[in-house]
Image (cartoon, rainbow, N blue to C red; front, side, top):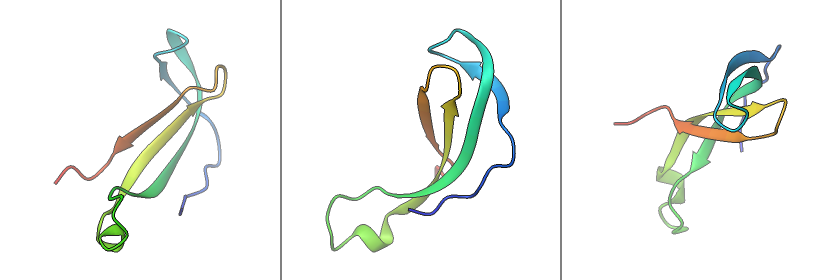
Length: 65
């Protein structure tokens, strides 16, 4: 799993906390296919955001082609 490092936490709304809180944000390349023969062709970038207050994590696909 590849990630990009983050230098500082970003404040954004948290659905769990119900308010704007600091979040650690990174980009991960995730494999979407569960079939081994297709795994090499099914990797997509996802924006991963983790709330630094409650620990809730959201993953949003960045390439919706």
